[in-house]
Amino acid sequence: MSGGQLSAKVVSIAERRLMALQLRKQGGSFRQIAAQLRKVEGVSDQYSEAQAHRDVKAELARINRMCRDEAEECLRLELERLDDLFARYWPLALKGASDAADRCMAIMRRQGDLLRYNPSAKVQVGGIPEEEGGAPIRVQGVDYRTAILPLAPPADGLPKEGGAGGAEG
Image 1: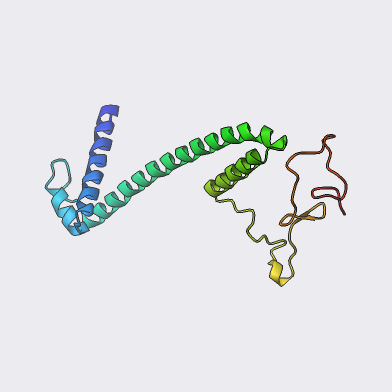
Image 2: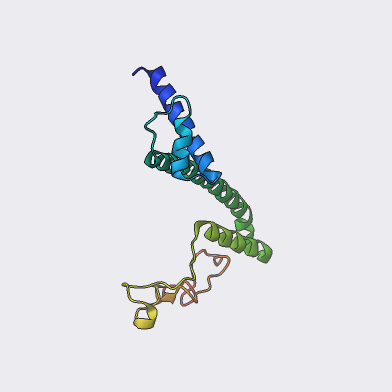
């Protein structure tokens, strides 16, 4: 089959699938869809209920892929915008501007929401829930749930000994 014939066949199948979905949206059963499409020029007299079902499923899958791709593009765009905003406020937050720090926190929360990331969710260590003897995650002896990190590093840029985020243990 040449490229032109193959393209015509692909277009024909796509049109048939779209018609099948439209008939299904109108409430048609697969039996009714098959009977209706057998009357369409270019559709086989052998077009069956099963083929109508496959056509509807294939068209829905195509639409779902398109929606997923579009949603991923929107998500990427939204995350880029948030990154740009964060880059604007982060230096100000590090200099001690509490309103900028609040905005950074709000931006991080929004990014977490978009990415379905929840750092406050219970974490299991070694597969054992905390209620059953597991331990909260600790980094250098600091409980991640209760550690409060300073907004700006000390002037020398090093964490203070014994403070939150410091080298304990």
